[in-house]
Length: 361
Image (cartoon, rainbow, N blue to C red; front, side, top):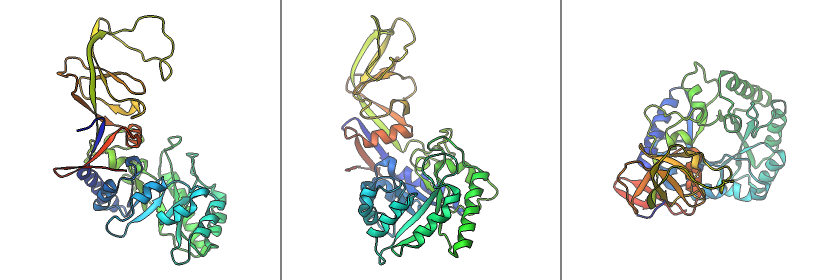
């Protein structure tokens, strides 16, 4: 089988989704499965839906287009603020989009129709300083949506942890809940979606005594990798190996532990620090920074990553029985998964039972 490649176990994706869906259902929260780290894979999206996700979301319009045609009524949400240049495509491929800008909302209204109104979730700034409308400006933004007959106000939402690591907690979630109740009372509407955030909200949602009005979370990393984003710790009961990256050994030699000669910067800045003395068994894999994020690679026991350039991954493989042509498989953290799924040089294979099916973007 070709390498480098990612093998995706759809059964494990479905299992992880089902576990989280069932746990969150106990506190009245629905799950929208986020496929962006899987490049909008229809196979991954279908696995999330089989696991009980009520809909799918992605940050890229082409990925949402790939998710069209999945069995059953599938709501698709664009989870990044729409680009003005793409409003026609957004309306064509997304049922709902997350929004902050009045100009974009007005443009969406021009692209939508009364027969197929486009849903708008207004995103509220609660401290992480990525996207979000200031609390004092939310009421005016609601009026902009309500004044557009081709739009429907789907709800309010927020995003924490992604930009500055602000932790979702009782305080900031209560602010969102209170804002929802104020908007409903002011305008005489009922908001069907109160989207509290992403996988970083799981710790709060599953431990708080009151989720308030939060009724939906946008879950990607926890489903795909079985970890929570705040500390990257495994979640009990979830698979952490639904995605495995394998690469081929192209050189294997005894080499000095330390480089020699005058040293400057390496290809990507400061040269890595190497420890040890004497010689090591050094392997080079056909895998580079064009393919994956070095910091997110999790090597097998007994292997140490020494460095990575554009096209070469250098390892100390110790006494492991490897030869040229063999493969080494790695676990992936979130950044590594995103980069590898995006790389055209990494093949993707979706495992369904005993069958391997190429995932063709």
